[in-house]
Length: 209
Image (tube, rainbow, N blue to C red; front, side):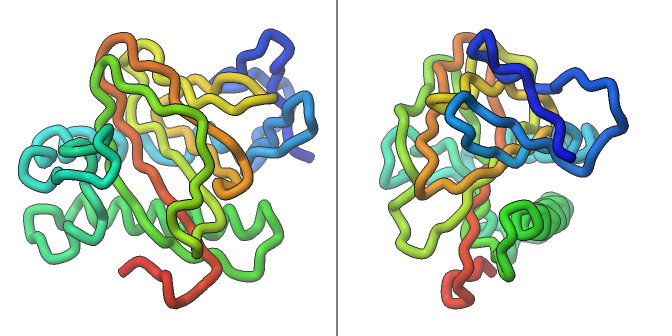
């Protein structure tokens, strides 16, 4: 039985209150009955801190001009790091996280196979936001997931129309059908937001390696 978060005030708390035993993951259900996979303690705080520190120090080196101007010099891609000795620990943490996430998504959504397609470390500076959209830039994408690496900032909630605003909590993960579920990011009003963004596929030809 999956716990349900209270969305009566239009906000999905980052860490839902509950009285029963903790389940492997929560089903956050909106007013339209749409489901989101939410795991409040997916990645340990120490691992989150390591990735935040790595991203902060490495963005100038690995960040590059992006096809979406918003993310130029704000994204470090997993593929870029595979042959970088200095990135070894970060790669190990990201590898484990994306593998476990793919297994959880497959189990939750009842899919026979879910494979990592792209994995990014993303830095959101004050003033950044993202309009509502669906993840349709690649025809092979099926699912999307976000791991919140920190929460010491203002704003930056994940927006799910019909559900509410998901407040970031360090170590939490939310996953959903990115090609059909519209979503966005509220403006970061202060501080810097760090996330590990992941996209998943069911096609071997699109496997990230």
